[in-house]
Length: 300
Image 1: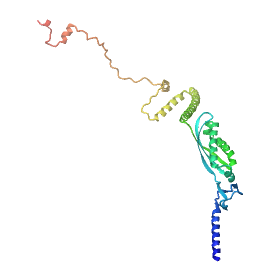
Image 2 (image 1 turned 180 degrees about the vertical axis):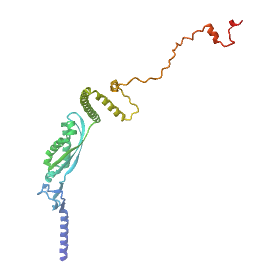
Image 3 (image 1 turned 120 degrees about the vertical axis):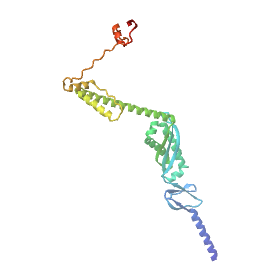
Image 4 (image 1 turned 90 degrees about the vertical axis):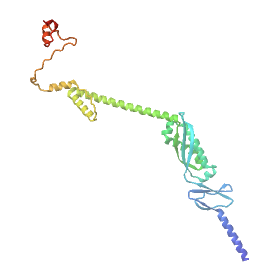
């Protein structure tokens, strides 16, 4: 009899251990447990820690309460100013009501992903290209509101939505580059024209001052020579004004006549090239002949 009682006690203990093992559940700190008993919500949401369920009757669903980072696939769309773009984003959300996340929607992650994609397409069609490129903060807020409105019924809260990248066609990129280059060139020309205007005003004032003092022009010329000589050029072409020579001539004191120099030698008058020597007379020709070379008419 005692042996039978021991066997029955062991069997009951083993069944209890098996039941406890099947009924015991552990919920982590970042999770919440939703228990469905025979398909109906049972009691409150289970807190983190150790909990028990009825095996075969209760079904425990663990819901992650952490912030989920979900990338939104790139969406092709046409902006309000008829530009084809490709935009992708990232969404941050978390579950605030575990029971609604299990009961109100089949798969809250998939539902949030699809809602984010459709909202992104809608925001692309309502925006201009300049807004997508430079005013993203406003678009992010608009996306957050569009996604958060239906997500609240699913027990999900949207924390933040960020547009990651905006891809443009190559033709549009080239057009924007040309536009930016033309704008920079326009600003450069305006700056140069403004500088020329200011410089012309200053040069006009300087010319008025120099017209009152003629020596200032010579000083400016010498200063220019010094500036050019500092460049160590091998050749320096300098226009020399005649006024400077006259100024130096007037500045020299009067001097006496120059000392006598050696008398200049008389120069022979140059004969024309086609004029030969003057003809000699007969007597002069005879005198110019050497002895013994007398002509035939002189023998006798």
